[in-house]
Image 1: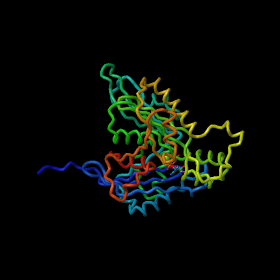
Image 2: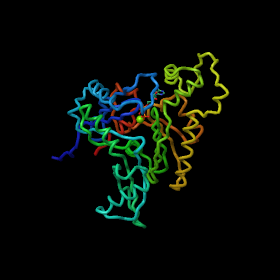
Image 3: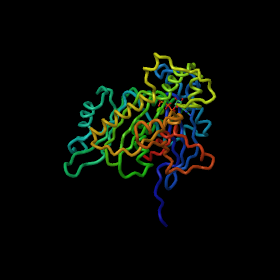
Image 4: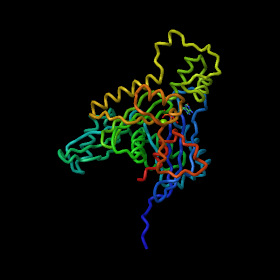
Length: 356
Ligand SMILES: Nc1ncnc2c1ncn2[C@@H]1O[C@H](COP(=O)(O)OP(=O)(O)OP(=O)(O)O)[C@@H](O)[C@H]1O
Ligand SMILES: [Mg+2]
């Protein structure tokens, strides 16, 4: 009889803890690929409430995660394969090239190297790395550095422990997005732009299977679109937020056309313009750094990817075909989930699909 390949875990849970919402995805591992068992998205602030992330306490997350796990019928103690992510200020990924070094010298050399490339003070830095390739001709190594701080990791672990979970694999959000894309999208060539549009920031990753990885955060997200609507349509935050969810960048055909922008406000750029500017600037930088301008597609994910009119706006202004990204290629979706492919789940799914 043929022996079955050992499967390290049967079920996995991916949790994406965002400043606005927590996203949990529960997957079952199949022989090939995964099956979606369940998922949930829950805001951590009531809809329509204006907030600044730094004003919110990390303590708010654990009770929400506990509630979500209950709804999903997952007993935290039984979760064997948990993958979560950290991100934001003081986290960073960078692809670098070094001369070939044997394993025992690599780590200390990279720590030294990372200090030059990554703006995190040396003593607090927690470093991880991945050797991507060794170039045949030169013997140089292409290495991906991922750095964070002890404080950020501790705060993250505390949230999970308070929710009764044991922290297991903690990824950097931008790296998780790049990995999920690499796993789910069968592209052979070209360069792709991935945008994870959240509430207060957007992770931007530029990557190609044969090209360099670049990543940075743009300080704009759904919150800034609501602010624009307040200004443009003279609404308070809660009404502007409701308008945003329904109409996004579009005009509500039923609204009275009395909403005018005052002269003073015209000089202020809209969030969609600012985002496009940031994309263009990063693309220019990428061409210079990586010597590759073969941009094939822009993929949008995150809650703000659902903003009506945004995809078309970006596609039109940046002039690269743009799509919503869903990492569902290898996931069996039971009938009841078929119409709920929500890009706000993309990162959580990518996390749950991590196999090691
Ligand atoms: N249908 C929709 N249309 C427009 N915006 C939406 C829609 N649904 C959710 N959003 C917005 O998406 C944002 C939340 O998305 P997401 O969960 O990806 O953010 P987050 O991960 O909590 O934030 P961050 O990554 O910035 O910490 C909010 O600003 C919310 O208003
Ligand atoms: Mg997010």
